[in-house]
Image (cartoon, rainbow, N blue to C red):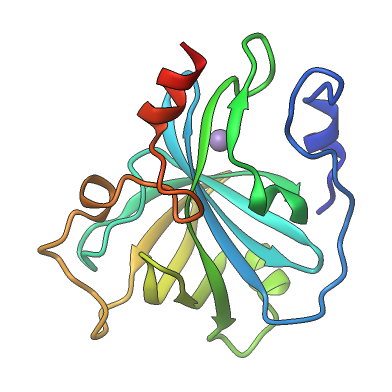
Length: 185
Ligand code: MN
């Protein structure tokens, strides 16, 4: 794990995204979910592990229904500063489009082994304390970069709520992807 691929893909003279460096941990680990309207809309689920944000791109976003398995593509680690990034990545840059902080909070590892080792083995199980996402969640590798994101069956599961549709806004600013599109013209 490292930020080399993240840096290689971006020209920080031309994108407002943070260049960032590996950070130091001094509190509970954080998670962030960014809604990213790139060439295809997706949700980037990121969890802090050893000073970087380990990241998965989830095309359909998280579901609160434990019976729903959402494809999560493991992508390059991002710097800790990325957890605060909300805005527009200019045209012709990697990931061009609007980004909002759709949810954010802290998490607890609920497995016995460290999260980094779980990622290497293809199993992540965490308890999220976010605004929209709370309770137990698991990420399970199928093969290669393809993982599945699933809500665990606990009292915070709620098959009746389509969280991505019902809560489209940023937890930082309240703005939506559509608001950012309008601002950009
Ligand atoms: Mn993305």
